[in-house]
Structure formats: C-alpha cells, structure tokens
Length: 139
Image (cartoon, rainbow, N blue to C red; front, top):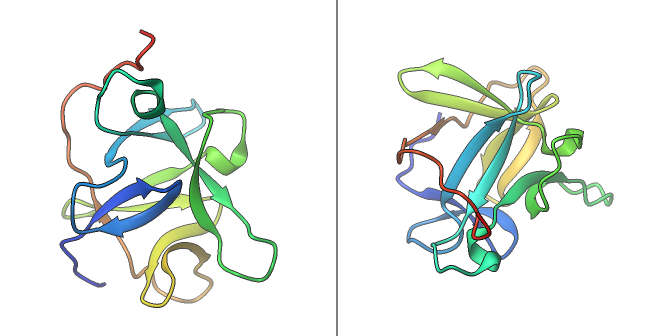
C-alpha cells in the first residue's frame, strides 16, 4: 500500500491527485439505495452553477485499450457507470470501486480504475468529514 499526502480532486473534468486546493475537492457520497453511491463533487462556493452544482463521478472507458478513468458528468443515479461502492478496509482506509474495477494510483497514469484479478488492492483512501452536505446554487 502506498502512502501519500496528496488529495483527490475533480480538476479539468478528470479525477486526479493534487497537492493544492485546485478543482473540486468536496465529495458527497449519496446513497443510490442499492449499496452503491453517487459521488458528487463540488467546487468552491461562488454562487455560480458551474462550481456550485455537483458533477458526479463517472467511469470513462476510452475504448482504445487504455485504462478506465473517472470523469465528471451530470448526475444520474440510474447509470451504472456512476454507481460506486465504498468499502472500509480498516484503520480509516476505504476502497472505492465501480463494478469490479477499483480506484488505484498508477505511477505512470495517475488515478485509474482497474480490475484486480489476483493482484492485491494497492490504493486505499481516507475520507474526511467536512460536515453536512451543501445544496446546489439553485436551492
């Protein structure tokens, strides 16, 4: 398991690791009712829908043999590509997955989703509770 002090951000429409406060770093897991969550990402509140309204994590398959990644999309709880599982791995660490693909850090590709097969889970994440979720700009 790697150890890093970086944060996760939805920056430029893609989920990335950052060492600053750029992008959308406020994530709100919202239950879908099936043991999965929409993960809503918010930018800094500035009373403009472009940053105040959420963008939901969505799996992107580039279709060219490249790795699965996570992008921001309009939230739709019916889309399987937006339904993530968050599982405790103990000591405050969580694994995040979509179907059988787990969010992993790749030194050469950054944050990707990959099926583990016989490989061990290398990446877990700490979730920080920042209090009650906020409402979008419109209400």
